Image 1 (tube, helix red, strand yellow):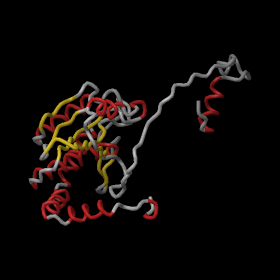
Image 2 (cartoon, one colour; image 1 turned 180 degrees about the vertical axis):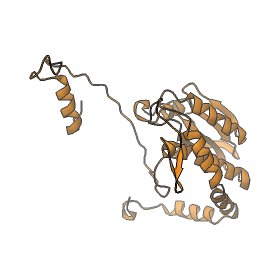
Image 3 (cartoon, rainbow, N blue to C red; image 1 turned 45 degrees about the horizontal axis):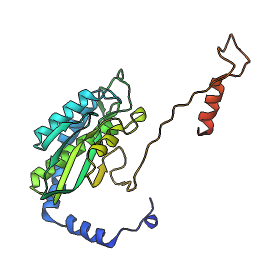
Image 4 (tube, rainbow, N blue to C red; image 1 turned 180 degrees about the horizontal axis):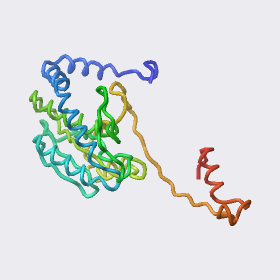
Length: 239
Protein backbone atom coordinates (compact mmCIF):
# COMPACT_ATOMS: atom_id res chain seq x y z
CA UNK A 1 0.00 0.00 0.00
CA UNK A 2 1.44 3.38 -0.97
CA UNK A 3 1.83 6.21 1.49
CA UNK A 4 -0.65 8.32 -0.44
CA UNK A 5 -3.45 5.73 -0.17
CA UNK A 6 -3.73 5.86 3.61
CA UNK A 7 -3.38 8.86 5.89
CA UNK A 8 -2.59 8.06 9.49
CA UNK A 9 -4.83 9.77 11.99
CA UNK A 10 -2.85 12.45 13.86
CA UNK A 11 -4.07 11.25 17.27
CA UNK A 12 -3.00 7.68 16.49
CA UNK A 13 0.38 8.90 15.25
CA UNK A 14 0.90 10.87 18.47
CA UNK A 15 0.00 7.88 20.66
CA UNK A 16 2.24 5.58 18.62
CA UNK A 17 5.20 7.96 18.94
CA UNK A 18 4.63 8.26 22.68
CA UNK A 19 4.53 4.50 23.14
CA UNK A 20 7.53 3.92 20.88
CA UNK A 21 9.62 6.31 23.00
CA UNK A 22 8.51 4.80 26.32
CA UNK A 23 11.39 3.15 28.17
CA UNK A 24 9.47 -0.05 28.97
CA UNK A 25 8.37 -0.38 25.33
CA UNK A 26 11.97 0.05 24.19
CA UNK A 27 12.93 -2.64 26.69
CA UNK A 28 10.27 -4.91 25.22
CA UNK A 29 11.47 -4.36 21.65
CA UNK A 30 15.02 -5.15 22.72
CA UNK A 31 13.75 -8.33 24.36
CA UNK A 32 12.03 -9.45 21.17
CA UNK A 33 15.31 -9.10 19.31
CA UNK A 34 17.21 -11.02 21.98
CA UNK A 35 14.49 -13.70 22.09
CA UNK A 36 15.03 -14.66 18.45
CA UNK A 37 16.71 -18.00 19.17
CA UNK A 38 13.86 -19.15 21.42
CA UNK A 39 11.29 -17.95 18.89
CA UNK A 40 12.96 -19.93 16.10
CA UNK A 41 13.18 -23.01 18.33
CA UNK A 42 9.44 -22.89 19.03
CA UNK A 43 8.67 -22.14 15.39
CA UNK A 44 10.42 -25.34 14.35
CA UNK A 45 8.84 -27.34 17.16
CA UNK A 46 5.32 -26.25 16.20
CA UNK A 47 5.91 -26.65 12.47
CA UNK A 48 6.86 -30.29 13.04
CA UNK A 49 3.39 -31.08 14.46
CA UNK A 50 1.00 -31.80 11.56
CA UNK A 51 -2.07 -29.58 11.66
CA UNK A 52 -4.22 -29.53 8.51
CA UNK A 53 -7.72 -28.02 8.84
CA UNK A 54 -10.00 -30.21 10.98
CA UNK A 55 -6.98 -32.11 12.35
CA UNK A 56 -5.25 -29.45 14.44
CA UNK A 57 -5.73 -31.11 17.83
CA UNK A 58 -2.12 -32.15 18.52
CA UNK A 59 -0.66 -28.77 17.66
CA UNK A 60 -3.48 -26.97 19.47
CA UNK A 61 -2.84 -28.88 22.69
CA UNK A 62 0.90 -28.27 22.44
CA UNK A 63 0.20 -24.58 22.00
CA UNK A 64 -2.24 -24.51 24.89
CA UNK A 65 0.48 -25.91 27.14
CA UNK A 66 2.85 -23.15 26.05
CA UNK A 67 0.26 -20.48 26.84
CA UNK A 68 -0.19 -21.99 30.30
CA UNK A 69 3.57 -22.10 30.89
CA UNK A 70 3.77 -18.39 30.06
CA UNK A 71 1.38 -17.65 32.91
CA UNK A 72 -1.63 -16.42 30.97
CA UNK A 73 -4.87 -16.61 32.91
CA UNK A 74 -7.99 -18.62 32.08
CA UNK A 75 -6.24 -20.62 29.35
CA UNK A 76 -8.80 -22.80 27.58
CA UNK A 77 -9.65 -24.72 24.45
CA UNK A 78 -13.10 -23.89 23.12
CA UNK A 79 -15.55 -26.21 21.39
CA UNK A 80 -14.22 -25.31 17.92
CA UNK A 81 -10.63 -26.12 18.91
CA UNK A 82 -9.19 -22.62 19.41
CA UNK A 83 -6.83 -22.18 22.36
CA UNK A 84 -6.29 -18.91 24.17
CA UNK A 85 -5.61 -17.21 27.49
CA UNK A 86 -5.76 -13.72 28.96
CA UNK A 87 -3.07 -11.20 29.86
CA UNK A 88 -5.01 -9.19 32.41
CA UNK A 89 -5.14 -5.42 32.02
CA UNK A 90 -6.19 -2.62 34.30
CA UNK A 91 -9.77 -3.40 33.25
CA UNK A 92 -11.50 -6.07 31.22
CA UNK A 93 -12.52 -3.92 28.24
CA UNK A 94 -12.05 -2.86 25.52
CA UNK A 95 -10.47 -6.28 25.08
CA UNK A 96 -8.11 -7.14 22.24
CA UNK A 97 -7.67 -10.58 20.66
CA UNK A 98 -4.19 -11.28 19.24
CA UNK A 99 -3.91 -14.60 17.42
CA UNK A 100 -2.09 -16.72 14.88
CA UNK A 101 -3.66 -19.67 13.10
CA UNK A 102 -2.84 -23.19 14.22
CA UNK A 103 -3.60 -25.02 11.00
CA UNK A 104 -1.38 -25.48 7.97
CA UNK A 105 -2.41 -25.99 4.35
CA UNK A 106 -0.51 -29.30 4.14
CA UNK A 107 -2.25 -32.67 4.43
CA UNK A 108 -1.79 -34.99 7.40
CA UNK A 109 0.55 -37.31 5.46
CA UNK A 110 2.96 -34.52 4.49
CA UNK A 111 6.49 -34.80 5.90
CA UNK A 112 6.75 -31.80 8.23
CA UNK A 113 10.38 -32.32 9.22
CA UNK A 114 12.27 -29.00 9.26
CA UNK A 115 15.73 -28.90 7.73
CA UNK A 116 18.38 -26.19 7.63
CA UNK A 117 20.82 -25.25 4.89
CA UNK A 118 23.13 -22.25 4.99
CA UNK A 119 21.09 -20.62 7.73
CA UNK A 120 17.78 -21.04 5.89
CA UNK A 121 15.11 -23.29 7.38
CA UNK A 122 12.84 -25.37 5.17
CA UNK A 123 9.63 -27.11 6.20
CA UNK A 124 5.96 -27.47 5.30
CA UNK A 125 4.07 -24.65 6.97
CA UNK A 126 7.08 -23.28 8.85
CA UNK A 127 6.19 -19.73 7.85
CA UNK A 128 2.41 -20.00 7.46
CA UNK A 129 1.74 -19.96 10.28
CA UNK A 130 4.22 -21.58 12.65
CA UNK A 131 6.13 -18.30 12.62
CA UNK A 132 3.06 -16.38 13.70
CA UNK A 133 2.42 -18.79 16.55
CA UNK A 134 6.01 -18.53 17.76
CA UNK A 135 6.11 -14.74 17.41
CA UNK A 136 2.97 -14.48 19.52
CA UNK A 137 4.63 -16.43 22.33
CA UNK A 138 7.61 -14.09 22.16
CA UNK A 139 5.30 -11.08 22.50
CA UNK A 140 3.79 -12.56 25.67
CA UNK A 141 7.29 -13.14 27.05
CA UNK A 142 8.12 -9.50 26.28
CA UNK A 143 5.13 -8.35 28.33
CA UNK A 144 6.22 -10.56 31.21
CA UNK A 145 9.84 -9.38 30.93
CA UNK A 146 8.99 -5.68 30.99
CA UNK A 147 6.18 -5.88 33.50
CA UNK A 148 3.98 -3.76 31.23
CA UNK A 149 0.34 -4.07 32.23
CA UNK A 150 -2.04 -3.14 29.42
CA UNK A 151 -4.92 -0.76 30.03
CA UNK A 152 -7.37 -3.54 29.14
CA UNK A 153 -7.27 -7.32 28.76
CA UNK A 154 -5.37 -8.82 25.85
CA UNK A 155 -6.39 -12.32 24.78
CA UNK A 156 -3.54 -14.28 23.18
CA UNK A 157 -4.12 -17.53 21.33
CA UNK A 158 -4.28 -19.73 18.27
CA UNK A 159 -7.26 -20.27 16.00
CA UNK A 160 -8.17 -23.29 13.89
CA UNK A 161 -9.50 -23.62 10.36
CA UNK A 162 -7.90 -20.63 8.66
CA UNK A 163 -6.73 -22.46 5.57
CA UNK A 164 -8.88 -23.46 2.57
CA UNK A 165 -11.76 -25.68 3.65
CA UNK A 166 -11.44 -24.37 7.21
CA UNK A 167 -13.27 -21.24 6.01
CA UNK A 168 -12.07 -19.19 9.02
CA UNK A 169 -14.20 -21.36 11.27
CA UNK A 170 -12.02 -20.76 14.32
CA UNK A 171 -12.15 -16.97 14.16
CA UNK A 172 -15.89 -17.03 13.41
CA UNK A 173 -16.55 -19.27 16.41
CA UNK A 174 -14.37 -17.15 18.69
CA UNK A 175 -16.22 -13.93 17.95
CA UNK A 176 -19.60 -15.64 18.16
CA UNK A 177 -18.70 -16.75 21.69
CA UNK A 178 -16.82 -13.58 22.68
CA UNK A 179 -18.90 -10.74 21.30
CA UNK A 180 -17.54 -8.35 23.92
CA UNK A 181 -14.06 -8.39 22.34
CA UNK A 182 -13.44 -5.05 20.63
CA UNK A 183 -10.32 -5.56 18.51
CA UNK A 184 -8.48 -8.25 16.57
CA UNK A 185 -4.89 -8.60 15.37
CA UNK A 186 -3.84 -11.65 13.37
CA UNK A 187 -0.14 -12.49 13.01
CA UNK A 188 0.22 -14.30 9.69
CA UNK A 189 2.70 -15.06 6.92
CA UNK A 190 3.21 -11.62 5.45
CA UNK A 191 6.14 -9.23 5.50
CA UNK A 192 6.91 -8.15 9.08
CA UNK A 193 6.71 -4.56 7.85
CA UNK A 194 3.27 -4.98 6.25
CA UNK A 195 -0.06 -4.33 7.95
CA UNK A 196 -3.45 -5.21 6.51
CA UNK A 197 -5.75 -2.83 8.31
CA UNK A 198 -9.10 -3.70 6.76
CA UNK A 199 -11.24 -6.70 7.59
CA UNK A 200 -11.11 -9.76 5.37
CA UNK A 201 -13.82 -12.30 4.69
CA UNK A 202 -14.23 -15.77 3.30
CA UNK A 203 -16.80 -17.41 1.03
CA UNK A 204 -16.86 -21.08 0.05
CA UNK A 205 -19.13 -22.61 -2.61
CA UNK A 206 -19.95 -26.19 -3.51
CA UNK A 207 -20.71 -26.46 -7.22
CA UNK A 208 -22.08 -29.51 -9.02
CA UNK A 209 -21.72 -29.89 -12.79
CA UNK A 210 -23.76 -32.39 -14.78
CA UNK A 211 -23.34 -33.39 -18.39
CA UNK A 212 -24.08 -36.10 -20.91
CA UNK A 213 -20.49 -37.28 -21.20
CA UNK A 214 -18.45 -39.32 -18.77
CA UNK A 215 -15.58 -41.73 -19.21
CA UNK A 216 -12.82 -40.33 -21.42
CA UNK A 217 -12.64 -43.63 -23.35
CA UNK A 218 -16.14 -45.08 -23.26
CA UNK A 219 -17.80 -41.72 -23.92
CA UNK A 220 -15.04 -40.14 -25.98
CA UNK A 221 -16.18 -37.10 -27.95
CA UNK A 222 -19.25 -36.43 -25.80
CA UNK A 223 -18.98 -33.18 -23.79
CA UNK A 224 -18.32 -33.92 -20.13
CA UNK A 225 -19.08 -32.00 -16.96
CA UNK A 226 -15.32 -32.04 -16.38
CA UNK A 227 -14.92 -29.71 -19.37
CA UNK A 228 -17.32 -27.19 -17.86
CA UNK A 229 -15.58 -27.33 -14.50
CA UNK A 230 -12.19 -26.87 -16.14
CA UNK A 231 -13.41 -23.92 -18.19
CA UNK A 232 -14.97 -22.28 -15.14
CA UNK A 233 -11.75 -22.67 -13.16
CA UNK A 234 -9.66 -20.98 -15.84
CA UNK A 235 -12.10 -18.17 -16.56
CA UNK A 236 -12.80 -17.37 -12.87
CA UNK A 237 -16.54 -17.72 -13.33
CA UNK A 238 -18.88 -17.36 -10.38
CA UNK A 239 -21.92 -19.46 -9.49
